[in-house]
Length: 217
Image (cartoon, rainbow, N blue to C red; front, side, top):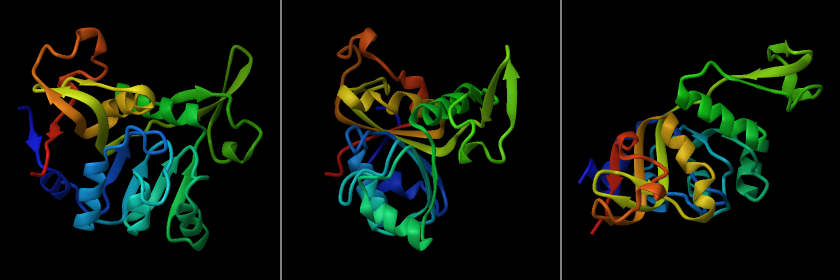
């Protein structure tokens, strides 16, 4: 099986101060076993790039509760009061990015692009310190690409060579962050023989996946 790792072994790959892209939408589609293993290891000063920080006790919220997060780049933190409190106290720094801009910056990082052009944020604090260009008479902000040391993926199914399929809102960020992590670790609800996942259902091809998480037992 491609790059098979138990959760604890996968967590050992992540050093202090690493940057992690983590899939999911309010923890739906987040790699919970992988997150639990990172919490158990206790590696800290992490930079998290994700849609949100879920809630206390769920998904990325577990990393926040454990005090392992130094910086967050996300579209919102509104449903996690612990993230908010840590940001106010200065324990965590937080860059809030509109959701569409965030996912496009990640896509740009994965595709090797120099950034994206967006009108979102013009005339607001978001514009401060950023380059503005004019295209066909319209003004756009240049937003820089995002990449990470690791992309942690939550999938529905994986096959033995790492092809992945997703369910429901797990489609939201997971397929895109799989493009932008230097090392991609995928956690699936089930691992099936090659051919079980129909080709049209493969949203992340196995060539992008470095490691598959297997059960600890």
